[in-house]
Length: 621
Image (cartoon, rainbow, N blue to C red):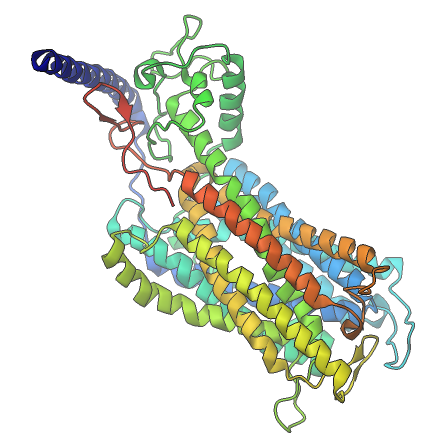
């Protein structure tokens, strides 16, 4: 028996060696062909400037966000107080605007990756954003472009005319165009300035994502305090002129760095390759799955491709049929497929697998950002009906400025995480980022549950105080102002910022690293499409809850006067959705397989003694 077992093991080992030798010979032949053909395609050496380019890129982003957030942060109040809209109408318009602007990033990313490149797209989009902000500023500066002022004691106010709404919406439209180009490209363009093939470049990219969001939140803090204060207490015309001027500065700063930027050229439509794999896989669906995929699948990477070579994976194996060679398939002398709508390469198939693996995170991101949306909308209404005075002085914190506490917690946490926690966790776990990106996102989703529970408890306290104790004022067209201090709202905003620091930054970095290189702008747009989906879902939930609870025994949960509603119930409902989201995300994280690259060939594998291909080092979460 022992002799027979030994003979079996020797055969398996010989089979493994023979299989590995065949694979290596086949790979070397293809590499020689590519080298021969690719001699005429040598590219000049790229001069990566790294952090030297960051003052222009982060400076542009800072001023761009100062301008955009400086207008959008207080837009809810602007629509209700200057354009005389109801809370529900204004919140719906804001959610639809945010949703459209974020979904527009997919179109902007496609045009960027396919035709224009990131530099040209960013330049055009920044100018469009400036024009949009200028149009919105004119609605405040020119009396004929907004409705007449409404007296505080008036119960009915004249709304905007069709012409006034058209001019306002034209400003929104230009801002949507600008956001569609800036949002998906700015992060990817910044990361392009670092060499991804060196350790310093890789760490530079990791730090860039953290510090990018740190400066981004700083810009939001300035917008939510100084600019919002000017808008609320000095003049809407001046308060909206400041963001427009800052956006103009953003345009200037961006173009100042033109000579030192690394500009990754557009490589044609990456979606064509995705479509080819799906179409060919359907055409060849009747073929039997190969026992040895690496010997049966077509392996080719075009010269000059910016995409890294990917390992073959066992997930979505039905797509492997797109790379199966049949007698009808023909190969060109340079090793490429004669008809890419009949035969795709393993590399193409693996790139499509990368995209399919990432898509489920979009659904988790949509639900997660429901929590963020509430802090930007109904939490502001909470602040309006809370005591916003600081001590005994007459100064009131603008309601929209409470969101700054979310930004403040994010700004404080990011440097601590990047400089203290990441190095400590890196030594502990051996992982480049300290923990995996999915673990980072999961922590943020968990904190989002706590955030909504705290929001519900605080709102219940605010409402009870308003109904049982003397009030401290009256908010026009809303109701009595609770004597509860607005400072009670700080914990929910701080927790929301902490959750955002974990999940949002993790998502952006995840999309950048897990998408194929020629689809990184599209990957960046997926983050903003999640924001869009969340905005639309939030609007839908508000509408459903508003209509469903109007005739309920508990009364309307979301009336104009929050003291007569049950906003806390609405918050608890969001918390329940976040619990379900966390469960879904944990299941997904256990299934997910991180993108791994090979060296020297499109697929790097290990061989077990039985001669079967095996992928190693799978990260589960």
